[in-house]
Image 1 (cartoon, helix red, strand yellow):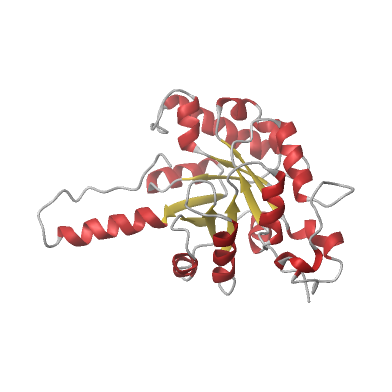
Image 2 (cartoon, helix red, strand yellow):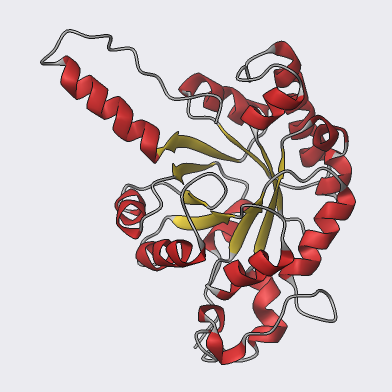
Length: 266
């Protein structure tokens, strides 16, 4: 049995825009529906959605037959949790609130087996090895793993270039909502100070030769970030899409405010 190809990582190397959807319902059924719609990648959110390791596994299993590439976001930087997420078969991890190059280096170590890291060996117990069905998994696992670190604070912006330069960091993802809070403009990612910081991160990461991504469910924002150099953009959130569609549908039958736009502060 061969090690599965990480199609998301391969796509990043092609330097073509990759459009993603945020999966926040926390169920395999909802994730599978989204996986049939044609997005390049899907963020399965383990930070703010009601997920645990088992529900993340169920969603990974549900989307496996489809072309949409799963990206799993961890709730924090805990190496033990990262080990579990890798063991259940996540090949691309997004890790929140990375503020220094040292934090980034520790995350790389958590992704790799000794002597290059600290990842524990699960062998035949874990889905990642296909229960010992993949020959030489310990030696080749890193080839198909992808680490995305999130820059979403003032300190992270200041250290973005150094973070992106860490060997083993494959991409950087900007979090506009937390960044707006860090820069004292909570809930206002469109503020000039926040936008200036976002542009600084984009340029710093690209100068380091790494892809940069962002969450932009508002269409105008997505087009602007793409023009600035973002390569992978989450352009929708499943929960927001359902809510908008439900409100729009009801408005056909009941007089009410039809204005329901995607959140720009997630």
